[in-house]
Length: 330
Image (tube, rainbow, N blue to C red; front, side, top):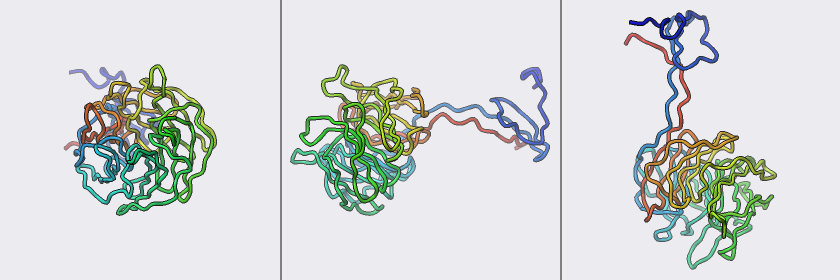
């Protein structure tokens, strides 16, 4: 049998403190804690099936984290239904005051925000509602009615709404509005006209990506823009242009784009590291118009549209960071 030295080219080191940058497969003995340690392999990204929503729906809002998410509004038909996810199953809770679809969304399971969207009779809306964990309450409206805008925000007191379809229900625009917990304020516009785009981050540091361009060839875009609290700047594009995908919420430097419509609908997933997008494991159910939440390492996408509305939930686990493990004799 080959020895450790023959395999790795070195003896097992005896050190007083753990190495600062161990490589995968490295083993050492810590003389301070008197234990044998090693650096474990980095795990691959993967999707797993979660509990299905109670209703098959699309064009809904999403908020929260993988184990505590909120899905609200949507269509099939137009609805104000709200469902809460505990990491394994969805429970219906109190409805939105205004049933609508294609709205912007932000926040947490216990502190969410819904804004804009479309509600019958056909019309693009400005209404904003805040969720306190139990009920939805109407608060101050957007300055510009819009649907299928990009949106993001960590909590319901700080959010951003950008681009979308405007008041006449046909024109796309670049307008951006920032929410401070009380009012919406118009700020500087995006660089590209689009709607049905995805977003992540806060009202002072956001990323908007993908979307649909009226009359475009192709209609879907891979365009990505960063918001620094004052201006939008074009940065590196998605690898696959798409619109109405799911998106993680909390960061402009670490985001997740989940599925969407290229067209056709896709399960392609990409991770943003602050500079570039990298393709990772695909979703099991390709879809567009789904709700999204979570982080780039623990994302969740729920419901959406394949050829019909679906209730399927999937949970994403990002590539694992290599970990130091302690060996025991058990």
